[in-house]
Image (cartoon, rainbow, N blue to C red; front, side, top):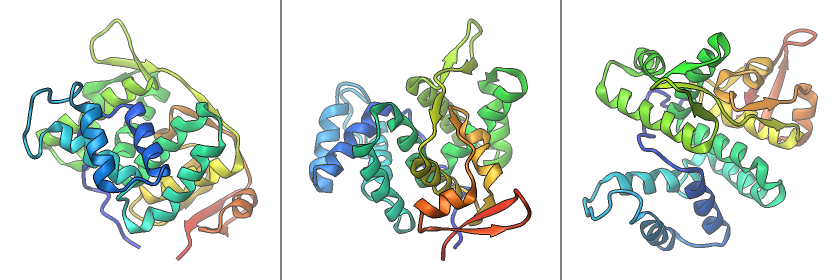
Length: 249
């Protein structure tokens, strides 16, 4: 399976509570028209106030919300279904990880920005927006649309509380860090991370320790534990502790 990991798609500032509201409406069995209308009502006083443009920022945000939890690409529908199920079963404190995973799978650009921010945080304890944008442009192209989208993803990270501002403009440090210990959620996040990659496989250690998951402390688990809870992942043993995880064909 190949996928377009060079597309942006996620180009707006999206709040965590908007994704939560969207997922809850999907869980309640609402169709696209009902959810779209409800999101219009939710966002009318928050985004593009007074604007009626056919493809204004509000409509772009609604497209992102729908593609994350409702009109998802076919290859991640099963992932989405399990994500919705987990939203009903896990503590509310873990919902951020589930939304993070779904956005990662639906919009690899989100993961690309997170990877650059996470690397800088590990290297120097802070991340400058300008440095993140420069590194993202190196991957996605020297376009203003790339810089603008990266800025909005970073603002989303701030809204979600996983980054926090410092006294210096455009310099961020880590915010909330969440522990992830549930094997089922870890397997699910592993699968989500694979969907954000250009190919279908990666070493398990690299996936769980990826800087794209910088807001989380993911418990180290054996590949066999992932195999026990996920039927969509395969494992190829390379050595004593070097397992390759891949999406099952």
